[in-house]
Image (cartoon, rainbow, N blue to C red; front, side, top):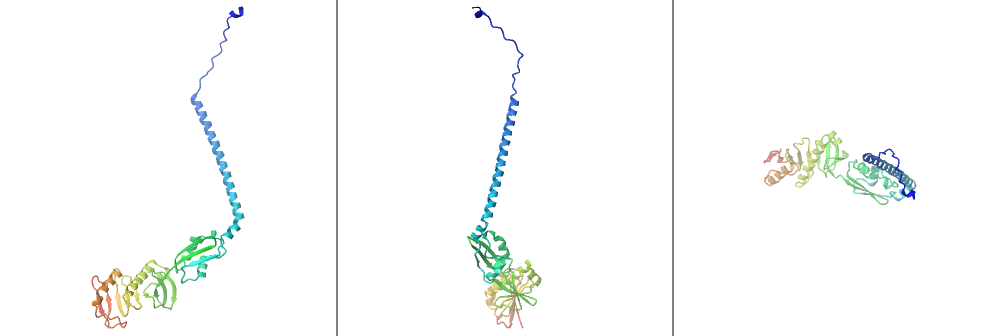
Length: 285
Protein backbone atom coordinates (compact mmCIF):
# COMPACT_ATOMS: atom_id res chain seq x y z
CA UNK A 1 0.00 0.00 0.00
CA UNK A 2 2.84 2.21 -0.99
CA UNK A 3 0.68 4.63 -2.85
CA UNK A 4 -1.17 5.42 0.31
CA UNK A 5 1.93 6.53 2.07
CA UNK A 6 3.30 8.54 -0.87
CA UNK A 7 3.54 12.19 -0.21
CA UNK A 8 2.04 14.73 -2.71
CA UNK A 9 4.48 16.78 -4.65
CA UNK A 10 4.36 20.45 -3.93
CA UNK A 11 2.96 22.49 -6.78
CA UNK A 12 5.29 24.53 -8.82
CA UNK A 13 5.70 28.09 -7.73
CA UNK A 14 4.18 30.53 -10.23
CA UNK A 15 4.73 34.26 -10.42
CA UNK A 16 2.40 36.25 -8.20
CA UNK A 17 -0.52 37.82 -10.03
CA UNK A 18 -1.44 41.48 -9.38
CA UNK A 19 -4.94 41.20 -7.90
CA UNK A 20 -5.25 44.96 -6.81
CA UNK A 21 -8.46 46.69 -7.89
CA UNK A 22 -8.81 50.44 -8.68
CA UNK A 23 -12.18 51.34 -7.04
CA UNK A 24 -12.03 54.96 -8.24
CA UNK A 25 -11.51 53.86 -11.84
CA UNK A 26 -14.45 51.47 -11.66
CA UNK A 27 -16.64 54.29 -10.31
CA UNK A 28 -15.67 56.62 -13.16
CA UNK A 29 -16.33 53.88 -15.69
CA UNK A 30 -19.77 53.16 -14.26
CA UNK A 31 -20.69 56.86 -14.19
CA UNK A 32 -19.60 57.25 -17.81
CA UNK A 33 -21.77 54.29 -18.75
CA UNK A 34 -24.76 55.71 -16.93
CA UNK A 35 -24.28 59.12 -18.62
CA UNK A 36 -24.14 57.44 -22.00
CA UNK A 37 -27.33 55.54 -21.21
CA UNK A 38 -29.08 58.75 -20.14
CA UNK A 39 -28.00 60.51 -23.36
CA UNK A 40 -29.24 57.59 -25.40
CA UNK A 41 -32.62 57.62 -23.68
CA UNK A 42 -32.91 61.43 -24.04
CA UNK A 43 -32.17 61.19 -27.75
CA UNK A 44 -34.78 58.47 -28.16
CA UNK A 45 -37.39 60.57 -26.31
CA UNK A 46 -36.54 63.69 -28.37
CA UNK A 47 -36.79 61.78 -31.64
CA UNK A 48 -40.09 60.27 -30.49
CA UNK A 49 -41.50 63.65 -29.50
CA UNK A 50 -40.45 65.20 -32.82
CA UNK A 51 -42.05 62.41 -34.80
CA UNK A 52 -45.21 62.66 -32.64
CA UNK A 53 -45.44 66.42 -33.11
CA UNK A 54 -44.99 66.05 -36.85
CA UNK A 55 -47.78 63.48 -36.95
CA UNK A 56 -50.10 65.72 -34.91
CA UNK A 57 -49.40 68.73 -37.16
CA UNK A 58 -50.00 66.61 -40.21
CA UNK A 59 -53.32 65.39 -38.82
CA UNK A 60 -54.38 68.95 -37.98
CA UNK A 61 -53.50 70.19 -41.46
CA UNK A 62 -55.44 67.33 -43.01
CA UNK A 63 -58.40 68.07 -40.73
CA UNK A 64 -58.39 71.76 -41.65
CA UNK A 65 -58.07 70.95 -45.34
CA UNK A 66 -60.95 68.52 -45.39
CA UNK A 67 -63.15 70.19 -42.76
CA UNK A 68 -62.68 73.80 -43.99
CA UNK A 69 -65.81 73.95 -46.15
CA UNK A 70 -67.88 72.26 -43.44
CA UNK A 71 -66.55 74.68 -40.79
CA UNK A 72 -67.36 77.67 -42.97
CA UNK A 73 -70.87 76.37 -43.45
CA UNK A 74 -71.35 75.89 -39.71
CA UNK A 75 -69.96 79.35 -38.79
CA UNK A 76 -71.19 81.35 -41.76
CA UNK A 77 -72.55 84.81 -40.78
CA UNK A 78 -76.21 84.96 -41.71
CA UNK A 79 -77.34 87.76 -39.39
CA UNK A 80 -75.66 91.03 -38.40
CA UNK A 81 -77.40 92.85 -35.55
CA UNK A 82 -76.70 96.55 -34.94
CA UNK A 83 -77.80 98.05 -31.61
CA UNK A 84 -77.50 101.57 -30.19
CA UNK A 85 -77.40 103.30 -33.56
CA UNK A 86 -79.62 106.39 -33.71
CA UNK A 87 -77.91 108.72 -36.15
CA UNK A 88 -76.20 106.15 -38.40
CA UNK A 89 -78.26 103.64 -40.36
CA UNK A 90 -77.44 99.94 -40.35
CA UNK A 91 -75.95 99.83 -43.85
CA UNK A 92 -73.58 102.66 -43.00
CA UNK A 93 -72.41 100.74 -39.94
CA UNK A 94 -71.87 97.58 -42.01
CA UNK A 95 -69.87 99.55 -44.57
CA UNK A 96 -67.67 100.91 -41.79
CA UNK A 97 -67.18 97.44 -40.31
CA UNK A 98 -66.47 95.83 -43.71
CA UNK A 99 -68.62 92.86 -42.76
CA UNK A 100 -70.73 91.02 -45.30
CA UNK A 101 -73.06 88.05 -44.79
CA UNK A 102 -71.36 84.78 -45.75
CA UNK A 103 -68.10 85.53 -43.95
CA UNK A 104 -67.10 82.94 -41.35
CA UNK A 105 -67.38 83.96 -37.71
CA UNK A 106 -63.94 82.45 -37.10
CA UNK A 107 -62.49 84.91 -39.62
CA UNK A 108 -63.77 87.96 -37.72
CA UNK A 109 -61.25 90.02 -35.73
CA UNK A 110 -63.56 91.84 -33.34
CA UNK A 111 -60.92 94.31 -32.07
CA UNK A 112 -60.10 95.41 -35.63
CA UNK A 113 -63.77 96.02 -36.44
CA UNK A 114 -64.24 97.99 -33.20
CA UNK A 115 -61.37 100.32 -34.14
CA UNK A 116 -62.79 100.77 -37.64
CA UNK A 117 -66.15 101.76 -36.20
CA UNK A 118 -64.67 104.17 -33.64
CA UNK A 119 -62.87 106.02 -36.42
CA UNK A 120 -66.25 107.55 -37.35
CA UNK A 121 -66.83 110.90 -35.57
CA UNK A 122 -70.34 109.92 -34.41
CA UNK A 123 -69.26 106.67 -32.76
CA UNK A 124 -67.85 106.97 -29.24
CA UNK A 125 -67.73 103.29 -28.28
CA UNK A 126 -68.18 100.04 -30.20
CA UNK A 127 -68.41 96.42 -29.07
CA UNK A 128 -68.45 93.52 -31.53
CA UNK A 129 -69.49 90.06 -30.34
CA UNK A 130 -69.72 86.67 -32.07
CA UNK A 131 -72.98 84.87 -31.30
CA UNK A 132 -72.93 81.13 -32.19
CA UNK A 133 -73.43 80.03 -34.77
CA UNK A 134 -74.46 82.52 -37.44
CA UNK A 135 -74.77 85.97 -35.83
CA UNK A 136 -72.46 88.93 -35.44
CA UNK A 137 -73.69 91.54 -32.94
CA UNK A 138 -72.52 95.17 -33.04
CA UNK A 139 -73.35 97.48 -30.13
CA UNK A 140 -72.67 101.20 -30.52
CA UNK A 141 -72.57 104.20 -28.20
CA UNK A 142 -73.05 107.30 -30.31
CA UNK A 143 -71.88 110.79 -29.42
CA UNK A 144 -74.66 113.22 -28.51
CA UNK A 145 -74.76 116.70 -30.10
CA UNK A 146 -74.27 119.32 -27.38
CA UNK A 147 -73.53 122.61 -29.18
CA UNK A 148 -73.18 124.41 -32.49
CA UNK A 149 -69.65 125.76 -33.03
CA UNK A 150 -69.45 128.82 -35.24
CA UNK A 151 -66.09 129.61 -36.76
CA UNK A 152 -65.69 132.11 -39.60
CA UNK A 153 -68.81 131.58 -41.70
CA UNK A 154 -69.21 127.85 -41.00
CA UNK A 155 -71.20 125.99 -38.37
CA UNK A 156 -70.17 122.63 -36.90
CA UNK A 157 -71.96 120.19 -34.64
CA UNK A 158 -69.98 119.07 -31.57
CA UNK A 159 -70.52 116.84 -28.55
CA UNK A 160 -69.93 117.73 -24.89
CA UNK A 161 -66.27 116.66 -25.12
CA UNK A 162 -65.56 119.01 -28.00
CA UNK A 163 -65.44 116.37 -30.76
CA UNK A 164 -66.71 117.62 -34.12
CA UNK A 165 -69.55 115.39 -35.33
CA UNK A 166 -70.43 116.97 -38.65
CA UNK A 167 -70.22 120.13 -40.70
CA UNK A 168 -73.45 122.14 -40.84
CA UNK A 169 -72.30 124.85 -43.23
CA UNK A 170 -74.78 127.71 -43.07
CA UNK A 171 -77.36 125.56 -41.29
CA UNK A 172 -77.98 126.19 -37.61
CA UNK A 173 -79.78 124.42 -34.76
CA UNK A 174 -81.16 126.95 -32.29
CA UNK A 175 -82.15 124.16 -29.89
CA UNK A 176 -78.44 123.88 -28.99
CA UNK A 177 -76.20 126.53 -27.42
CA UNK A 178 -73.91 128.45 -29.75
CA UNK A 179 -70.16 128.63 -29.07
CA UNK A 180 -68.06 131.20 -30.95
CA UNK A 181 -64.44 132.40 -30.93
CA UNK A 182 -62.98 128.93 -31.61
CA UNK A 183 -59.88 128.47 -33.76
CA UNK A 184 -61.09 126.77 -36.95
CA UNK A 185 -57.80 124.97 -37.65
CA UNK A 186 -57.56 123.54 -34.14
CA UNK A 187 -61.23 122.56 -34.31
CA UNK A 188 -60.84 120.54 -37.52
CA UNK A 189 -57.60 118.95 -36.33
CA UNK A 190 -59.19 117.96 -33.02
CA UNK A 191 -56.58 119.76 -30.91
CA UNK A 192 -56.91 118.84 -27.24
CA UNK A 193 -56.73 122.46 -26.04
CA UNK A 194 -59.52 123.49 -28.44
CA UNK A 195 -61.70 120.58 -27.29
CA UNK A 196 -61.20 121.64 -23.67
CA UNK A 197 -62.31 125.20 -24.47
CA UNK A 198 -65.42 123.90 -26.24
CA UNK A 199 -66.17 121.57 -23.31
CA UNK A 200 -65.88 124.53 -20.90
CA UNK A 201 -68.28 126.58 -23.02
CA UNK A 202 -70.80 123.75 -23.12
CA UNK A 203 -70.50 123.20 -19.35
CA UNK A 204 -71.21 126.91 -18.85
CA UNK A 205 -74.23 126.69 -21.16
CA UNK A 206 -75.65 123.81 -19.11
CA UNK A 207 -75.22 125.72 -15.84
CA UNK A 208 -76.95 128.84 -17.12
CA UNK A 209 -79.60 126.78 -18.88
CA UNK A 210 -80.81 125.44 -15.52
CA UNK A 211 -81.63 129.02 -14.49
CA UNK A 212 -82.68 130.81 -17.67
CA UNK A 213 -84.61 129.75 -20.71
CA UNK A 214 -83.66 130.73 -24.21
CA UNK A 215 -80.68 130.04 -26.40
CA UNK A 216 -77.31 130.69 -24.81
CA UNK A 217 -74.32 132.06 -26.72
CA UNK A 218 -70.80 131.59 -25.38
CA UNK A 219 -67.78 133.49 -26.68
CA UNK A 220 -64.70 131.36 -25.94
CA UNK A 221 -62.12 133.45 -27.77
CA UNK A 222 -60.33 133.99 -24.44
CA UNK A 223 -60.56 130.76 -22.39
CA UNK A 224 -59.65 132.71 -19.25
CA UNK A 225 -62.58 135.07 -19.80
CA UNK A 226 -65.62 133.21 -21.10
CA UNK A 227 -68.50 135.48 -22.02
CA UNK A 228 -72.11 134.23 -22.07
CA UNK A 229 -75.15 136.00 -23.48
CA UNK A 230 -78.71 135.00 -22.59
CA UNK A 231 -81.97 136.95 -22.73
CA UNK A 232 -80.12 140.17 -23.44
CA UNK A 233 -77.80 139.94 -20.41
CA UNK A 234 -74.06 139.46 -20.80
CA UNK A 235 -72.14 137.44 -18.20
CA UNK A 236 -68.36 137.57 -17.86
CA UNK A 237 -66.51 134.70 -16.17
CA UNK A 238 -62.92 134.64 -14.91
CA UNK A 239 -60.35 131.88 -14.46
CA UNK A 240 -62.07 130.57 -11.33
CA UNK A 241 -64.29 127.50 -11.72
CA UNK A 242 -67.37 128.64 -13.64
CA UNK A 243 -69.61 126.56 -11.38
CA UNK A 244 -68.50 128.48 -8.29
CA UNK A 245 -68.92 131.82 -10.05
CA UNK A 246 -72.43 130.93 -11.18
CA UNK A 247 -73.43 129.77 -7.70
CA UNK A 248 -72.27 133.14 -6.36
CA UNK A 249 -74.50 134.90 -8.88
CA UNK A 250 -77.52 132.76 -8.01
CA UNK A 251 -77.17 133.63 -4.31
CA UNK A 252 -77.33 137.37 -4.98
CA UNK A 253 -79.69 137.29 -7.96
CA UNK A 254 -82.84 138.06 -5.90
CA UNK A 255 -81.25 141.32 -4.72
CA UNK A 256 -80.31 142.54 -8.20
CA UNK A 257 -83.48 144.52 -8.87
CA UNK A 258 -81.99 146.41 -11.80
CA UNK A 259 -81.51 143.29 -13.92
CA UNK A 260 -84.16 142.89 -16.55
CA UNK A 261 -84.02 139.73 -18.66
CA UNK A 262 -86.26 140.99 -21.43
CA UNK A 263 -83.91 140.24 -24.30
CA UNK A 264 -83.90 143.87 -25.41
CA UNK A 265 -80.86 145.01 -23.45
CA UNK A 266 -82.68 147.66 -21.42
CA UNK A 267 -81.34 148.83 -18.07
CA UNK A 268 -78.61 146.63 -16.58
CA UNK A 269 -77.31 144.21 -19.16
CA UNK A 270 -73.89 143.02 -17.94
CA UNK A 271 -72.91 140.94 -14.93
CA UNK A 272 -69.19 140.64 -14.24
CA UNK A 273 -68.24 137.62 -12.10
CA UNK A 274 -64.46 137.84 -12.57
CA UNK A 275 -63.83 139.40 -9.17
CA UNK A 276 -63.58 137.19 -6.11
CA UNK A 277 -66.36 137.59 -3.52
CA UNK A 278 -68.18 140.33 -5.43
CA UNK A 279 -70.35 140.87 -8.47
CA UNK A 280 -70.25 143.93 -10.69
CA UNK A 281 -73.46 144.91 -12.51
CA UNK A 282 -73.16 147.38 -15.36
CA UNK A 283 -76.08 149.20 -16.90
CA UNK A 284 -76.49 149.20 -20.62
CA UNK A 285 -77.79 151.98 -22.82
